[in-house]
Image (cartoon, rainbow, N blue to C red):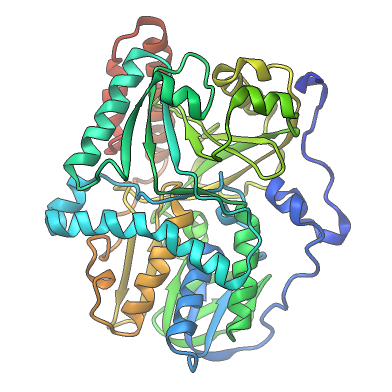
Length: 477
């Protein structure tokens, strides 16, 4: 197998038949040619519901609204193409967990509501699978669960604590279980694995295929999607694409990592960068050695963890944070992935699977996800203004966006349901600090976590810098 450093740019040149979007990720490359974008909005119009953003949140919301009330006039406005952002560039985990600690949810709404939220997001994995089957979306959906693997005693201690925490918040052994070294290695042959947490509620998916297939299902239901229609601002009763207006009783903000581009929302969600590489296809002997037959998703035990999946075309996709944040909430992440980040992700892959040292990197990309100041996603509607919002998934949005879409549907239709009463329904968190404070804060936390990983790998003891990172960020890692 060839050395990956011999390939200066793992991203191939975009296929002109794909209108330049093929290069966004390996997932988009698999779908090429995409065909021309959907028509942009050319004149002002009215609608019952206007959704700004054509990623998972916007598409799931549109899908659920039309299923609930086919008479609704629903329009989706997307600045690029459906699935352009994190929806088409992520690690492909349909994960039945939400960012944010149960303790924080319970402080807001109580224990019973928090347990209900945990069950609702866990059940969402099956819900996504039902839609994939019902709509005939070919997206390599396999429900194999997920593994958090430990390669050191300290990591194993943390993994055990996660399983204990699951028990404390209503998850039984059918949901989450601690595997010993032999059982963990029997699932995936991670080098030196000492144990793992297995969480049943996760599926592997080709995310761009899911996003594009969902967009087609939304259109079949009667929703109008306008691509190449960037919105500069929203206000009660109106969204403002370039040169036109969409007037609507309800305006749904579903812009995630691109929210900072909307007028007045520069500090609402921080655009966090995530980077990915994918290997060239592995041979049968390599897969036999890895024993990764269940298509579990996987992440390691570091503070700055990496996340992986076995792709349907026989590759390994691995991602991590890389350079986490650009000054002043810049969100243009369409250029090549820096060689330093590619090499770092490849090194983390080899640490998990040393036999893959010689495998070539077949693709590399990055994108942005939305992070709220309290690190917890939120869904909400202000009925007095008609403005609705959902997002801030902190990288766990493939499943969460489906739950958000179903929740927004109930809120917009005025339904008093269990979903509408879940504790993540409420007002968005306060905004992020002004620059340069948020730039310094994000990069300081990233550096502290990296230092913690180095210290713990060398000493085997917990690093105080990890605790300091938690204090600065306000997040439980």
